[in-house]
Image (cartoon, rainbow, N blue to C red):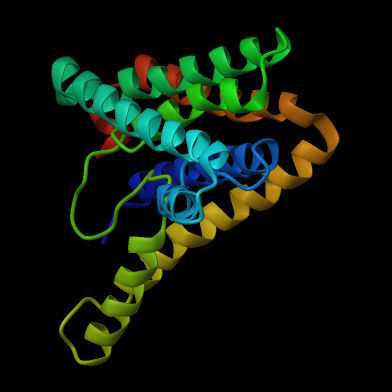
Length: 217
């Protein structure tokens, strides 16, 4: 079972991912900055139907998410376990700031949201994988599967009784973040990304002010 501080930090990060992803979904009219299974399906559909104009955006989102994931991994590796979370969170914060700057300079959503897709990829490297519950991630398909699998195993006495509920908490945090993001976007438009930027900034400061290992362990 995860400790309460570790779980709460991970749930906040996943909620922030849901908040951000729904804004990308709205701005990109049905494409995603975090949900690469959806973009992959859309890419396959565009190729299969010969919709050549519809290939570029999902392909670029997939590429930038991949690049962001690699950048996040490099940053985590080179900064070491003590500072990896802080540095990687900083990368995500920079991607949010860059996205907002490009948006306010008049760039099109299918341009400035690519930066945010890279940031979404990097976010998955903020918290190290530990145990069976992945925290702080930007996607929950595997999480839902793990919840169902752990539920079945728990009923047979082969897994901790309530571990499946932690998986569902991760899923619920993404859902809650997406709900808040939708409401915020309705009121603030693209400026609603300032909310998640502020949250990531708080995390960076928290990592810097205390011992980073105390925040993630």
